[in-house]
Image (tube, rainbow, N blue to C red; front, side, top):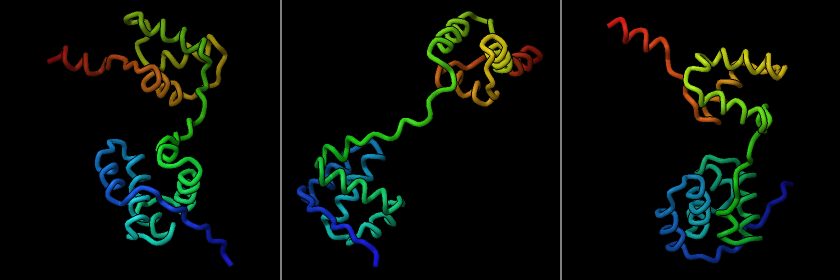
Length: 154
C-alpha cells in the first residue's frame, strides 16, 4: 500500500496567493505560488493532481510542500536551484584567460583558445567546454572572421 503524505495546512487565502502569483515575475516562483493556490482553492486535491497541472514530478511537489510546512511561504520562495557542476578551470586559469581575452586580437578563434589552454596548462578539455566557458561564463564573443571577410568582399 502506498504511503500518502498529508498535505499541510495552507495559511494564506486563495485570493492572496493568486495576487502574489500574478505579481511574481519569476516563472520558477510562480509555479510554487500556483501550487499553493490550486490546493487552497481546491482546484487540485492531491500532489499528483498538482504535479500534472504544473508539469513537474510529484516528488518535487512533495518537496515544495515539505519546505512550506517547515519554513512557510518565504521559505518556499527562497529555495534556490542546485548550482550544477563546478567549472573545469580553476579561478587562477580563468583570470589569466580573461586577461588575454581583453587584449584585442590575441585569440582569433575558440580553437586557438582551446589549444592554448591544453598546451599551457596541460589540460584535457573538449572544444565544447572551452567554447561554453569563454562564451557564457566569461561572456566574451570573438569576432566572426567569416562575416568580416564576406563584408570586405561586398
